[in-house]
Image (cartoon, rainbow over all chains, first blue to last red; front, side, top):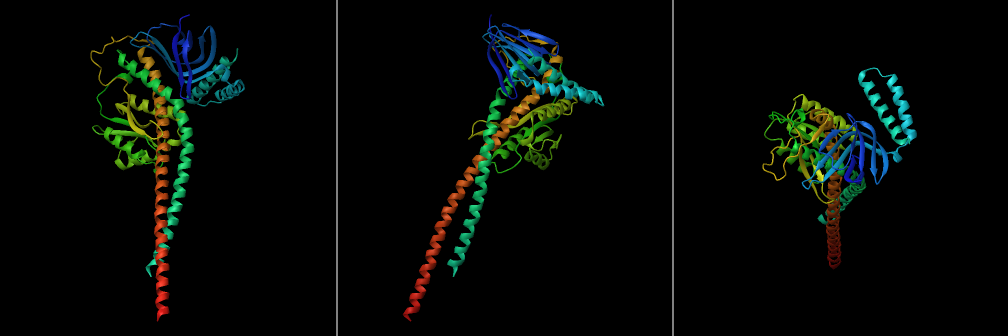
Length: 137
Length: 285
């Protein structure tokens, strides 16, 4: 399959840089799949599992917040840039910690007093569930 | 006679210079160890910083939709400057260079500021610049989540019309030996002047779900990322500048001690010679 250049960065460093065949991420609107020669594109990321396919092999990651941009240079070559707030490869996720975080978030959610607390707890729960989902096979 | 008194004086001065040198040496060591960590952090955050900036600049350049408030250029009634400086002095020209640039950028329109670092807070108080918040007075302790809090605050202010332009003044970490202050325009997200007749035809960008929703979702994160990057750069610059300044100070102190030792020995010799002359003169009588 044709490859495109993909860069994935977070404030903590570069998570991926190189050629890829396919990228699937969760945006604020739902999952999108990016293939080579995509049109120029800009969207914001939600919280969800991301999948990157390189040479037929798919890696999973937990991805939250940030943006996804497909740009084209003057030569017509497209490059895909994913600037995420957090991006963790499945093999780097501590499943036990995510499980604990999930339980804590659930507890917080039950005892939330106002809408702000509730939304914070909900966001935490979502992140923990995403991590668990990405880490699980 | 004067020789003895001045010998004592010189001895005292040597002692005081020595203890000052001990302090500058210790500060240099502390700065070096912090520098290693800060340098690592800059190297890690830099790809994110440059990629965010580059992508948004390219997209703003090609943008043809102005439905989001973040991309609309308004008349500048008030400017907001995020001022990232150090917490402490004794870092060479680090703080003063930045403030010189900031003062230049603040001219022309009324300004408010978001100071980060104790020195920046002091600068605002001294120059009568209104500070939006003093919550980030310690530049060393600011974390990624603090950057998100800052960005939320700034976005709210921008959308509420409290200011019409946002820029960040920080210090670029060029290398261990050189740091340059810089100012980056953040909001609104449209280039000041469109390059006319640029070679490439403007390419249309697909926004999903729509340009307004996308910008509204992206900008706070973008701002936080840029602030974090600028903060990492600034902190590394600060410790690098401090290390250099302290290195120079230690060298100066060593030179001074050498010079004072020479003077001390000369005074001692003078005193001995005088004593001998007095004894010889007494014996002759």
